[in-house]
Length: 534
Image (cartoon, rainbow, N blue to C red; front, side):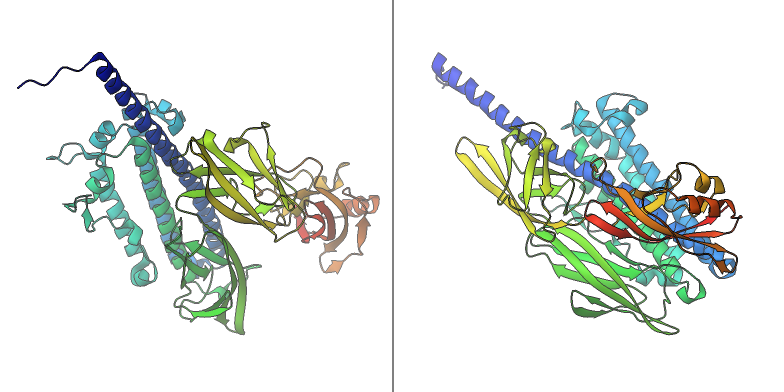
């Protein structure tokens, strides 16, 4: 029996339904793709941060090696091998990202290096990436199988580098031979589990996560190698506590977990820590700290790590801030998790399933902060800033709303704490960084010589004219003789200072003290600054 013919009206209704369904699907897909791109961008920034932190760790290690080559040589050599192997695998994954983009988009490798995921024409394509990573099901000749072997070889290499200390460092994030199952519960291998029918932007996010795991493992292993060197054998001018999260994100219902340790210590000693008022014991210089994430918002860990030394217990204070976000709606400062006084803090918001144009960001109370829009009347998250008031430690609550045909709906809220901006440092006018310690005499006798305020690691835009030196004092050390105190009531060197500088010789030290400066927080005293004349 044949089916009845449709009337023209029925055909038109059917066609409209198909169009509506396609438009609805396209809308959901677009939001999902944007979420993947946002996550991918955030992970790339995280990888850059971890790379910089690891380089700082290598710098400290190298100074220890320079102080005592005989004792540190073996561990320093291992650290150099870890550095090379880590960079090699990191670069291989980076090249893999370029190749899968080039393959999917049909461009050259060089063109792929310049493309941002938001510019992809095939953001939702999974056929080409799946073929790239898995290849033939029989031959198993896709890139994922090569990645599997390289990651496994890297993990084995790190275990060998650690030697007897393998139990002190967790390399679980590098395990690729686990119990993996697909959505139906069928056992699959690591390659299929991660790369089967995944879209290109999801693949990039996964590859970035693998790079994060490499940097984390590199940091843990090098820190363990360094910790086997006794701190008391070296003469460091500073030592700091280190907090390394084992998870990059935390949501309500999950745990926040971190390794907390000092950079140099006796690995045979038993350390303790006081964290937010509670005492914890650790082994081999590491304390595993875990606390449930029961609510969204900014969380702060404060305390001290206590390490036995030759002359008693040494305590090293630390403070670490992390953020717990809501599963369905999040809001965060683009550059950090707090709002800094005296500057415009960029704000962005994402709500699952809601287009950017339909998201509205509002402050619940404007007495301690105000919203600034680059485009008047715009709700676009890329044009909104928050300017906190002068009440530090006050909480600012931000609400996220979604506009729809049913009206306006609250999607989520979050509170931020207003904080003072970090204390700047002073540097010589003409130097690129305050960390430069050896300077030529000509820089001190220059007509424009003086001090300036330095905030190289502050990510937010600083209003023009907000940073300046008000006054400072100078003493010169020539051999064993310390000269009298000279004072300048401004940022420039006084005539008395310049005349004394001209009498200096290489090796003389200049001490800058009682440095008063106008900062984003008002008038503050900066840390003392010392240089050696070349």
